[in-house]
Structure formats: C-alpha cells, structure tokens
Length: 240
View (tube, rainbow, N blue to C red):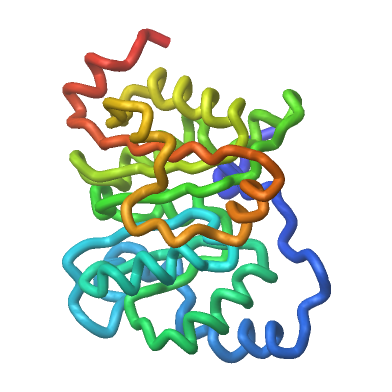
C-alpha cells in the first residue's frame, strides 16, 4: 500500500473528550475562524498577524493554552502559532485568548506535521513541545512525536541558532528524546548543569497538566536544544 504523505507524522490522539458545552461550541464556531492558521497561507506566516512581527514561535500541543498565552503576552513582538487538535483544549484556549486581547497568536487545529511541512525553511525562532502523549506501550512508541521524521521537520523549519524546547514528566520519554535528538544531530542539548533540566524554563507559568503531575509525585524535566548549523549537524550525527 502506498503511504499517504498527509498521514506521515500523523496525530494519533483523540479529537474530542467530554461533550463540548455551549460556551465551548460557541468559541469554536465564533472565534476559531478568525484565529485559524490556514495552510494555504503558510508560505508567508509572518504576514498573518495584524502588526509586523520580529520572529515566529511554534507551540505543539498547547493543551488549554496556559503557557502559550503567557509566552505571547511576554513577547508581543513575536508571532506565535499554536497547534492543538484536541477540541476541548482548543475551545478553552479560544475563550481565554478572546478575553486576553492578544493579537499575536494564530491557531492550527490539525496535525503539527502538516503545518511543519508547509512552513518556509528556517522561518521559526523556536518550537515548544510540552508534555506530549508518551505512548507508554512499546508497540506505540512509533507514535511519539519525537522521532526522526518529525525532527527532520523541526530542523527544516527552525533557523540555525533557534530553539527546540521539550518538557515531560515521563522519565522514559525524556531519555528517548535525548537519544533521538542526539542520533538525529541537527540539535544540540544546551544543558551544562543539573538545574538546566530540573528547573522550569524562564518565565514558565506552569500548566494544569503539570500541576496534576507534580501533585501525583511525578517530576518534570525541561530540555532545551539549539538548532546547529548544517555542517555541525553532519559532524555530530552518528552514522545511521
């Protein structure tokens, strides 16, 4: 069977959880059209904001949007693209985004791989992936977002010197991510001391999921990677 290119890197999670309430349904119907990132506009993403932006940042799987809203408020000169296919979280985010008055956020409600494939090369200053589904069963590890094809996508879209940040409360997924990134070679782990992965990122507001994880005794890990130059990536990547 021929592989459908639109399914490479596909989102495997649920699209909806509990039945959407009236306010959530209204948010999706009324607010999403004006905020949605259309793939047809991906060739010039910096032009999708009502004011000029000095750079672009992507957050993959923003949940209910706590971090994305905080990050965008702290950096009004940056354009943010948030990806979240889970409609319950997307609806919650839209309500809070509407109340915030922020204009530097656009939202994409499909698989992040489809967006990364359309973005111009080197257009992103950074990308965040926080608390992704760890797919704990071994037979499902291939569904994890951090894997060679998606790292290829991130490496193409993030400029040299740009940033890829990852957070998880699942030790195996943290180790998996470090191994996958090292093997890939396009990113360099920036940590020089233990606090670099034990302490949250600067300006970190926390998330609802993280608070629940900590309350249940799980310890978060915060990883920061730098996109290296192509020559350095070739030299650092082990032979496959």
